[in-house]
Image 1: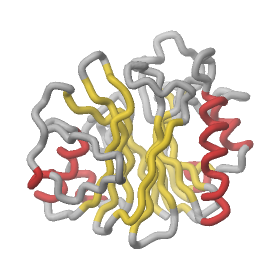
Image 2: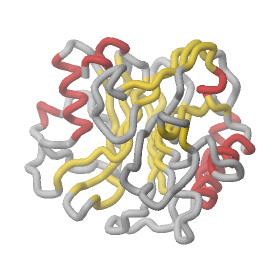
Image 3: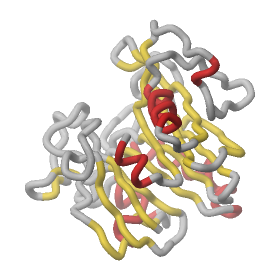
Image 4: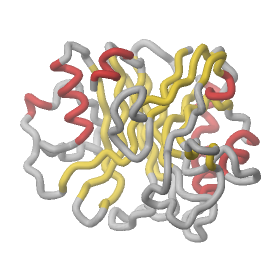
Length: 259
């Protein structure tokens, strides 16, 4: 939380944001800043991680508007979802949609994307969690094609940012990373005037036990990205929550860019 309060990014995107299925619902007074779409008003439970982040920011004096949607059951006991936050501004529009072929809540391969637009920007910001390139049931390419098709109109109207876990190491040619680049999206890490190693995972993490390649020697893999639909000036790209720049809070580290 200290890093977020210190840096106060305009937009914060999180993936695999869970709450316990059996936890009691959060009281209304705790839901300050929550944005909901008509017909998509999920039950926010007391241990919802997005709620904990929003509450922590408010206690630190940082106002945030936030949007959370459940996607699937995780490990048989969690409502596992996605979240977006905007700090010191308000969400004015939001949407969510599936990019996976499967939409069953009980299927762990179900994938959904969340998007918001704030009262300070015309840009759209999306929290993304992609499947694996080699998955025969839910391939990266199929999910990417659905995402691209959904965003065609948006790309003509506004600048778009994709933030999150793409499960595609930049070091493996001909797979997910190259697929996104070939579609015209710009990797803000490559655009940055100053950048670090970029590695967002180290060692073997859940879901990657049988995967090989893409490691940054001695550091890990870069599989979490911030993409933009157009080339933009980027001052810095830094990895955070990696133990040296903030405490580790996940098996994925965060990416912070300054434009």
